[in-house]
Image (cartoon, rainbow, N blue to C red):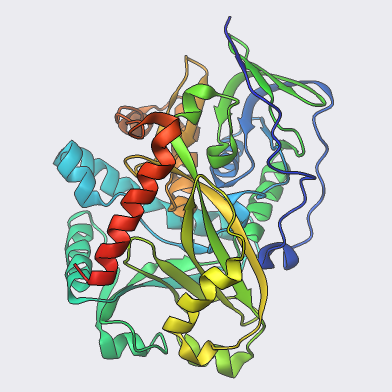
Length: 438
């Protein structure tokens, strides 16, 4: 038997949700009990974010008895703080995957990565999840070069069986976004946006209705490997036959073999005051969510109560900026000068896990411990897809699991000590290219 040790997670503090718009507008949800004493489980999932919830819900729908262990509250991490955009694909483009790993693998991945949005819609429909789910997202281009990238993306996705994209010139974009900064764009009709924390809370409730159990405020401090993995928490232990690690950017050092594979990166979002229907609809007349094509991009959309939710920026290493509003407001007012002086009611930050290749990772540690992480900022759909694939593997079908588990992973150059400065340097370089339009 081998053992893995890790310090108790200090990341969650009291475990209360951060002061986000999503937390302030969340649907009512119970506080689930922490692990107390010994808990025996057939399948234990660590992490009640989208990866863990999707895995657990898919398994519960297949009839498995699942126990979910969460260090804070359901959806406390990136799953309850993100921009709420349902965007198809991975951070790494299918073109990069094809160039790096060949057309056969790209074809397999291309067939899979379109599923995430459909999984979300299926959960929402089957389990009556109230999360303000709306259709459509818009990619915007600042330059002619970026428009060519969109045209190539449309052609590539068509090769993989997806034809929900519509190219727009600058005038057509203005019909969707009241801004003059864009050279054009592309709509993905199969994308969309929603209230991310309410989606997580609804998935958790669905797991429980199907007989699953969720323990909150139970950070894993120690994993004992073996035929029956044992997880230690401050209040007790969990003994399971199969363990699935879905902590992503918040797993910490509990499993060092995974910690070295990814780097936490924070991104920021703010929510304005309610704008009223007339003012909000003038900004985004068709109520699409929007993201641009720059390396460090802006993303924004309207909330159900007609606030502008505007996000962007990155901090490598996962630290929170000193003043989130000061960081994001210039970008918002660049896109929408008419928003100058608008009050900001909420501003928050959250971490995602960045992999060096920007391709999410999935695999096993031994025969009975599975993991998935590293969505690199495209986790809303990717995590739901990986949850389905993990459930298939545990249920006995490794076909799709093996596609991703076989992909090599690469460490950040310079190891853990230099991954932040390395990534900052790369970010500066690509940001300069964006500013120069090259």
